[in-house]
Amino acid sequence: METIPLSYYLMLSGILFVCGVLGFLIKRNIITIFMSIELMLNGVNLSFVAFAAQWHSLSGQIFVFFVMVVAAAEAAVGLAIIIAVYRTRETLNVDQVNLLKL
Amino acid sequence: MLHLILFLFFGAICVAGAINLLAQSHPINSALSLIVVMAALAAEYLLLGAEFVAAVQVIVYAGAIMVLFVITIMLLNAGKEEHTRGSRIAIIVGVPGVIIGAVLVAWTLLFRSHTTSVTIGAEPGSPQGIARLLFHEFLLPFEVTSVLILIAIMGAVVLASRPDAVARRPAKSDHKELPELVASGKGH
Image (cartoon, rainbow over all chains, first blue to last red):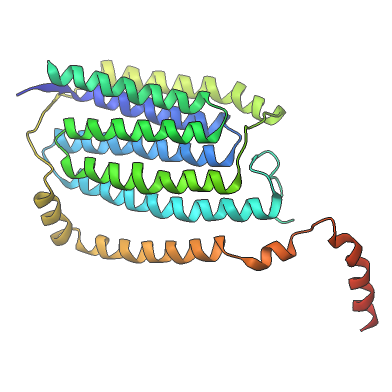
């Protein structure tokens, strides 16, 4: 049986998560910030699947399934919120979205 | 050996796509590189023996969610992002902090943890096994998830389709009518 060290998968998962955090911090476009959140979710999913393979349990994959469902719901609602924000402010730059109420 | 080469190949594609997402300034380029990341991650899931998760990753993530993103970018006509003083402060403070955290986590994983190797294909994540777990042990969360999806659909429809929001937007032509409205309000 071929084996790959678990730490390799965790390193890849950590790199993806860190890229997501960096994008969340340095990006100014609200859609790109939202995509960075999806990138973080993907990194977490990879570590879930790696641990599921490590412990010979399918529960980790079920968790990935639920994370994907929540991510889909979050993307639908979040993009609707972005559209509503764009309608009222006519900008996607988060620096200019600094008022709770217009 | 082949598995390791495949892991490194698709892992390199993942990391390159993620870094490209950060480097691009136009949102559509970021979205396309995120699709590349997700497709390469599906290959990683296949390497781990998680066939069902790999299929769902391609169908739901790279398919449905990213199409939603691309359509939103096209709908809002998103252009290049411009940086301001606040974003430079975020870069100056955020990037070193994130890098320090990443180095700490990597050091812990490499030298302080006692993780073993993952055997390839030891536990195939076939749809049968997933379904047996999902519809026996995780039946209640599965049903609750359907309620969540329903609420998300209703929320998205309510948030995105507000025709009166366009009318209430303070356009330039509205400013002329505003004193008249106030005056008529006082008259009543």
